[in-house]
Image (cartoon, rainbow, N blue to C red; front, top):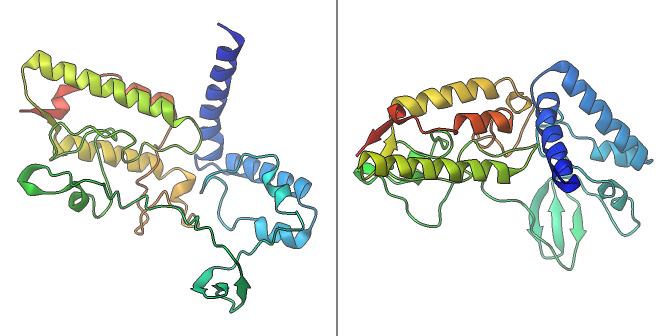
Amino acid sequence: MEFAEMNRKLIYENADYFFWQAFEWTPEGRAHFTRLATDHLQEQVPDEEMRKKLTPDYPVGCRRILISDDYLTTLMEPNVDLVTDHIAEIVPEGIKTVDGQVHEYDVIAFATGFETTGWRWSVDVIGRNGVTIADQWDDGPEAYLGITVNGFPNLFVLYGPNTNLGHNSITFMLERQVEYTILALQALEEKGAAALVPTEAAQQAFNKDLQEQLSKTVWADPACNSWYKTGSGKITQNWGGHTRAYADAVAEVKLEDYELV
């Protein structure tokens, strides 16, 4: 094994181990990473008031963890002004924050994110009985293994519900999903079937187990307000364990969990 390959493998394995320490809801792990983050902030930002602004009010791991050696120091530059008050409205002069102050700007760069829990597709995906996937997922998306969806024969979703990561390479997950899709298509051909669709029971059982697993993570903490969750608090974005566990889950197609058409 070449050095570069060994290094990539080491980074991957360390990142997967990182999940257990940072995201699983253990007081020891959270305290350890909170201390690391606090020490890093103390080292890079000497100004106490600035540190107060930069200290999150949610538990570590709730949102994406910043991995950078120069982001915090950049905020200390004389031409940078950090404003943490929420935006009330856009006004002709610039931005008005909830404290009533108007911040004058010539240019505003919108970086407010994107819709993550609505799953609005650019095309209408219509399943059985004319139901669209947008309607079926209106209360929060669910899929079987994050790939196939009950009521939608031969629909294979890459980067589907609950396959996002906050700690490792999403490419690994996508590659496993592609491999699973190929296995499913091969099974269709071998069985002489035209389509397959996960049963409602299989999809419900998978998501019940997944949500129980996610309930033990930092994302389930009531103090965690994150784009990983819907408005009701259901975690619809993230996988609830190590990437190896996902690879094992999709290593074979269990036809007993499917209806063949």
